[in-house]
Amino acid sequence: MKSPHSALPSILARFVVRDDCLQIGGLPLSQLAVRVGQTPFYAYDRRLLDQRIAELRGCLPVAVKLHYAVKANPMPAVVDYLAERVDGLDVASQGELRIALDSGMAVERISFAGPAKRPWELQAAIAAGVLLHVESSHELETIGRLAEAQGIRARVAVRVNPDFELKTSGMRMGGGPKPFGMDAEQVPAMLRRIAVLDLDFQGFHVFAGSQNLKAEAIVEAHAKTLELLLNLAEQAPAPSRHFNIGGGFGIPYFPGDQPLDLEPIAAHLNAWLPRVRARQPQAELILELGRYLVGEAGIYVVEVVDRKVSRGHVFLITNGGMHHHLAASGNFGQVIRKNYPLLVGNRVSGGDREVVSVVGPLCTPLDVLGDRVELARADIGDLIVVLQSGAYGMSASPGRFLSHPPALEVLV
Image (cartoon, rainbow, N blue to C red; front, side, top):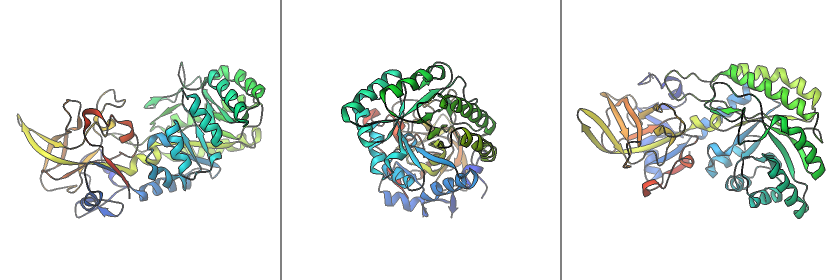
């Protein structure tokens, strides 16, 4: 079917539409809403999760391991589902660690990154046997002390803040002064200290940036990352077993965005593998992906509770908004606000169409899901769908703002 507006063609192509109603998990959206029992809700489609993993497995070298960054979507059902399909889980808090451990993923395939890990978080991670990505000298000393007290040789990798950035990324996590990881020039001293503390050194972690749609930028960052890690590995107290080179793979959200081309990235990694094996034969090459795995598999569904015309402009007032989906409101990192792709889920094309603004129930002008978007004409009771909502949705939103009820989440 032809998409109703220019942002949707490639995005909507992943979904099935029957009788002008979006299908999720093999169900018409209207039927799914009845099954869920309330709106608003998030729905994540197993078929789309499987499709994305299959695309990656079919393109990337077999030797490259896929890890899921739980921060993108920590819903336990989603994590459990992915734990059976990826090679590892990466967490950034004790709460995420509990979810990862409950998923059944082998502990040696779980890693824990992030600044400001508290002593009790480190204690729990050491006791569980997961891999700790060390972010600072102070953290390293704390790990050494806590591991000695437990009588456990803690598994550690060094998170490196490189001296380069992932160009054109939506959020830059490396290069220049950063709170994440150790500056590359400080890493050799940390490696020597790891040997003194008799910790179980496993390898390195670099995460240069996120939400990148330019394959050439990712290829350039991978080349610089691997060269850096191979050089640092020569100074390590043990052979490297993990080269986690981060993620950064983006998904299209806005008009003009083009899906990421995986082929150049795969070809480049395939060319690098012999060099990695020659210099660090035990090292696994790991891609840590979050948004790219789950972002396009999820939708956020709200219900129109009022239809209002103000000075000639139509407002669709819904029961959900920025308190559930901060990113879609433009208040999660956007410099200039842009609309996430929207549609009327039970009238995808519709007959009549109109330009409207979709707003939520909160008493703030920031509570906007869609500003002057063309949609099928919607009435009270219709379902508005925000696509590309599988990552950084409910868990990244101020859910208690104004004390409205929370959204539900379902995996279908």
